[in-house]
Image (cartoon, rainbow, N blue to C red; front, side, top):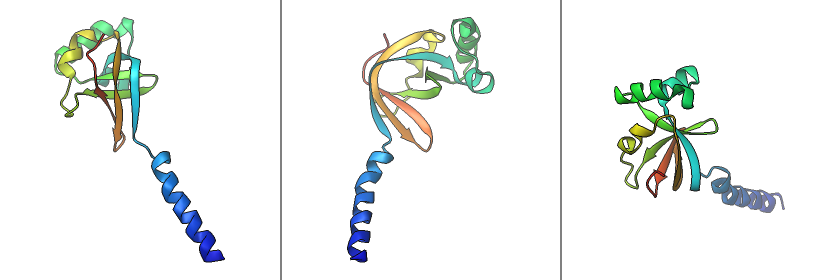
Length: 117
């Protein structure tokens, strides 16, 4: 009886694990702020008040990211090529995007399905 219960518990755990640790999600029509990753991570700076500084950093080669809530996302296309150039002129602005969130090793990617609006 114990072996049967243990076997059943193990089977249920294996079925539930993918749901508990899912690393993909749909992001249909979600809004993100385009931010300078360095300024946000090191100083918490973002928003319209920081747009000019963030744009200067990004234009100088600094990395950008998409901010939603407190999470940063790296914008990529379906082949995981950077979409940085699509967003460099939008630092400090909100963009609405369709795509799929992928998380690997603690890094959040937004696989963008439609161009920035």
